[in-house]
Each structure stands twice: as C-alpha cells, then as structure tokens.
Amino acid sequence: MYKLLVSALALVALAGSAAAESHTVKFTNRCGHGTPMLIQGANVLSKGKTYTHNGPLTAAIAYLQTGKCGFNGDSCLTVEATLKNPNCPGCGSSTDLTLIPPHSFNIKTGFRYFNGCDGQGTTCTGPRCGTKNAFFKTDDYTAQRQCETNNVGLEIIFC
Image 1: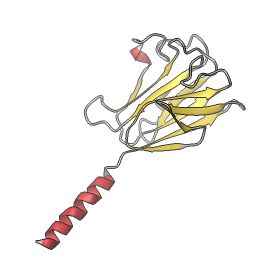
Image 2 (image 1 turned 90 degrees about the horizontal axis):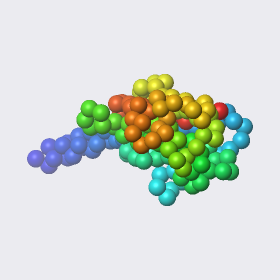
Image 3 (image 1 turned 180 degrees about the horizontal axis):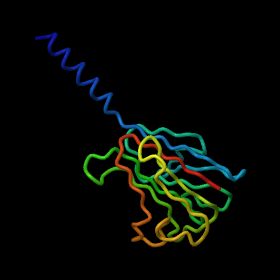
C-alpha cells in the first residue's frame, strides 16, 4: 500500500510539473533610443530584458519609454496583453495595441506571438493605424489578436 501511495504521489507531481504554465515576453528595439517597459499593475516586470512569467500573465502593458510616457504608458502607444493557457474555447491569450486617450501615438509599435500562433500580431505605424490594428475606443474589438496555444510567447517590436 505504501509503495502504491508513493507511486501515485510521484505521478501527481510529475503531471503537475508537466502542466506548469509559462509565458515569455521579449523586446526588439530598433529605434536606437528609449527603454522598453513591461508593467503589471504597480510593478515593473522588465525594462527591456526578456521576461518569463510562470503562470498566467494578466493585464500587462508594454511601451517604449522615450521620456514622455507616464508610468502606465499615458501619452504613448501601448501593447496590452493577457497571456494564459486556454481552459475553454476563446479563453486563451489576447493582445492588442491601444490609442484610447490618454494614450497617443509616439513611435511605431507592433507585436507578434511566438511558440504558437507564430507571427500572428499587428503593427501600428502612425497616428491613424486603424481600428483593425489598434483600439481607439473601448469597443474596437477587431484590434485584439487571440492565441489559443499553451505557453505562447510575445515579441514586442519598436520602430
């Protein structure tokens, strides 16, 4: 009985480690200036270095700090992301660009998924990048890019 219990516990531990969720955010800054920022709530998660988050990464924002952006990316174009493994259809990762005031265009910004949904993403190259590429108001849902792959990563590109 003891051996059976130990074997069962080992199997549960192995299954738990195999199901561990992890998401990586990396930055490509082609501008030659500025500091890529990754923020979640009141926490700075990264200032341009590749960041790996164990578990779901919810309500994160990223932008290129050029000196005029507020802490939450105010006055700048931001990437908003929730990266999570799907547990139902449509419940996976979602990322978008936002120009909803107080945000405004400051620098060409884009993103794309990797490690699943490879290359899917979008780019905004100017103040009028369109509702299919960025949120200008809270119901511009066509700007969202979904990914239903476990452990998907996100690359954020500036310039």
